Image 1 (cartoon, rainbow, N blue to C red):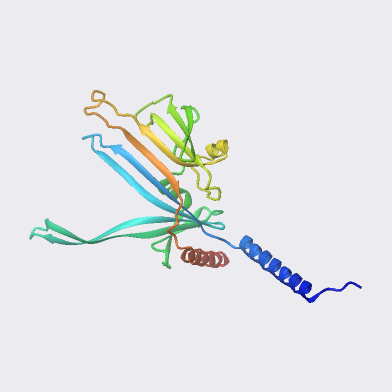
Image 2: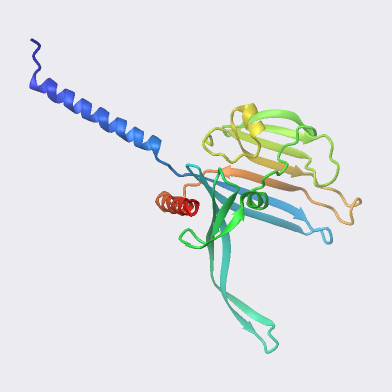
Length: 264
């Protein structure tokens, strides 16, 4: 007959309990949804054709993933001010009291071609929108980030733990084509679906997370004015400012709403 000491039994029980807890915790993590965040930052520099004035368009879109659901956080700038006007309603002076940023949210099931636009994360009512239309207007879907026919690789280097490819445009048909483009790759975005180019992601087995398009300056002559150097910049960045709990509630409420709509 094999005898077990009380200490051995206690140790075995503790080990079994710990194993059960670890297994259960891991199982729960596998079966539950977790928010994943990233932000898309872009800056576009344009030249006005009438006076050569530089116009800069820049913004940041938050992108959140939760199971089969994707949400875009869209910033909206608001300014509250006191305005003094004369009797003819002409502005005499304006005193800015407060400037703030509020966010609307476009959320959708990635298996469907439509989603809903909410004015805020706590809004009840929402407007139905086309996913393709939204992505084309706001998230650069189908934007020509890469053209295999006219882009030619000239160098590869490493900078700040990033792999950098430099390419030039072999056939610049007009001024809308960049002269040089830099592609930046690195690890760390493996669970982020958004991509500038699936093909380029796959060629390096890394995430293409940053693109810098350079437009060379044009001396006066071709146009009535000299055109300065410009750039288009697109970059995916980690976003640690999101509130996971708040977003989880938002997605779960949306899932309930979707299930109710499907049942009706």
